[in-house]
Each structure stands twice: as structure tokens, then as C-alpha cells.
Image 1 (tube, rainbow, N blue to C red):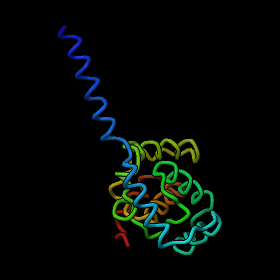
Image 2 (cartoon, one colour; image 1 turned 135 degrees about the vertical axis):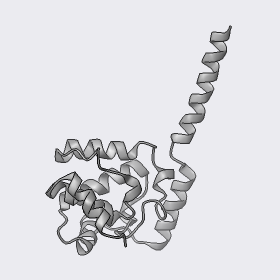
Image 3 (cartoon, rainbow, N blue to C red; image 1 turned 120 degrees about the vertical axis):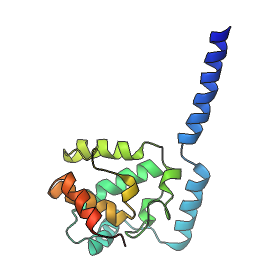
Image 4 (cartoon, rainbow, N blue to C red; image 1 turned 60 degrees about the vertical axis):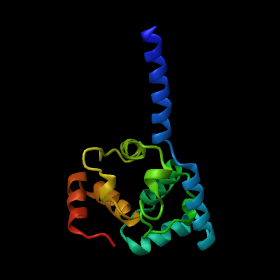
Length: 157
């Protein structure tokens, strides 16, 4: 009998945990609604051009990778997102994404670019999309350790 209660308790706890780790769909809707009210959508090409004005050295492949991944994780209409948008304050990433978005991002960086950023990627230190793109560009160009050092040296906009 005790075993059955333990199984039931574990089942209930797993449902509660699932809810805590799942995206908040109402917040996701609010973010999308706010973006759609104030911004026109950009084509993928125009989106990349806007980022390249801020980070001229950034490669189109890197930008499209970030666009595709972050849109997939968040459910946010990324064609309305801009370079200076903050992941936490503006886009509510901790609330609109699955809890493991940063781990998935690191895994996809390995698969796409062949570099492992898992040991140095800390999403709490990435404030804006510019920060994320600059970090990823630096990792691709040099090494993940150097990229994190560069991020520490430059204050976020």
C-alpha cells in the first residue's frame, strides 16, 4: 500500500514540476502581442541586415542560426525581434521557453558549428541579442573561453 502512495505522490510531483518547467503560454502570447503592436515583421534577410549594422563582422549563417533556434525555443515571432531586445526583460525568455533552452542551444551549436560552448555559456550573462550574437561570433572565430572573457570586459548596452 505504501508503494502505491509513493507512486501516486511521485506522479503528482512530476505534474507540478512539468508545469514549473514548461513555457508560460500566456506570457508568450503577451510578448508576441506587444511586439506585433509596435513592430513590423522583417524578412530573414532584413533581420540579418539589421543585426549586421550593429555587429558588422557577424556572419549571416550565425544570425540565421540564432534566429531559427531562439524562435523555436521561445515561440516568439522573431521577425519582430530587434538587436537591442533583452532576453529576460523584453522577451521574457525564462518564462516563454522550456527550462532547458540554453542546454539545447549549446547542443545545437556543437551540431551546427562543431564547437562546444557548454562549459562557458551562461545565459544569465547574456543580456541582449547583440550580446548573444557577439558571444557566438567570438566562439566561432576564436575560442569559447576567449569569448566569455570578451563578454566580461564589455558592459552590455
